[in-house]
Image 1 (cartoon, helix red, strand yellow):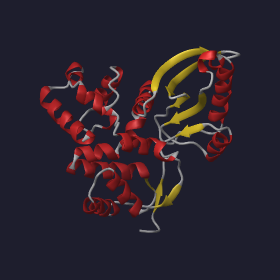
Image 2 (cartoon, rainbow, N blue to C red; image 1 turned 90 degrees about the horizontal axis):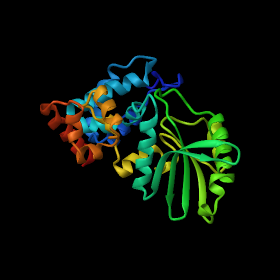
Image 3 (spheres, one colour; image 1 turned 30 degrees about the vertical axis):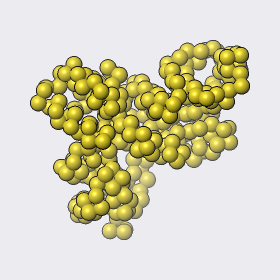
Image 4 (cartoon, rainbow, N blue to C red; image 1 turned 60 degrees about the vertical axis):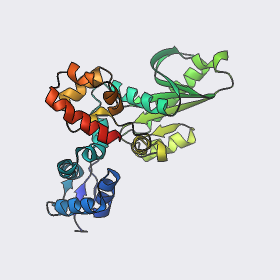
Length: 277
């Protein structure tokens, strides 16, 4: 089994790692015994070159049989990809994460730089700190953000600092440029971001502010995680700006409004309650 290769979304082939699979299952809430049993079942179905996505599907299906809310946690990466196609729900999701950290957040602003106007996806303020955030959403895992992304965003950021953010209102505040993505950055992009003092936030970096750990820490799961909803129903909730599972629990009438039948609403809310619990 150590010689068996799997194909990642990037096309890279790596050795299958059962411990990594078990760890991800336990992270989602599976017990050690259940995680080991799922891993053993999946190992019996592996073949050389199998895609990481196919392994995810097998694991998700087995988790779902045991507990839907555990499968929902496990599906976070795919749930973020399901925010498309516009990317607007991803901006709203980032705004929710920042609000949970105590920031006052505005989205979709158009402000004048020194040279031209710029759209600001997310503007967050707290205790003298200002985050000017750009959101780069992708609906495919193999879409990565190369160094051109932080390069051009940094140029926009400095134009805004010389224009809109150069007024007395922003004096004595620490102003930072952040870039958020639901996939990943290339090594060159990360190196440039560090050198330019930009914060690049992706699925797994940086640390507790990588999206995976940020959601785990705050419990702000997107509604696209829920296994008891169809894709059409998830899209309908996002159109009504119901982005988080917590928001759905606070306003379950949203399910009625999008046409979910009463006998299914109970199942959806049960999964949502366990996921947030």
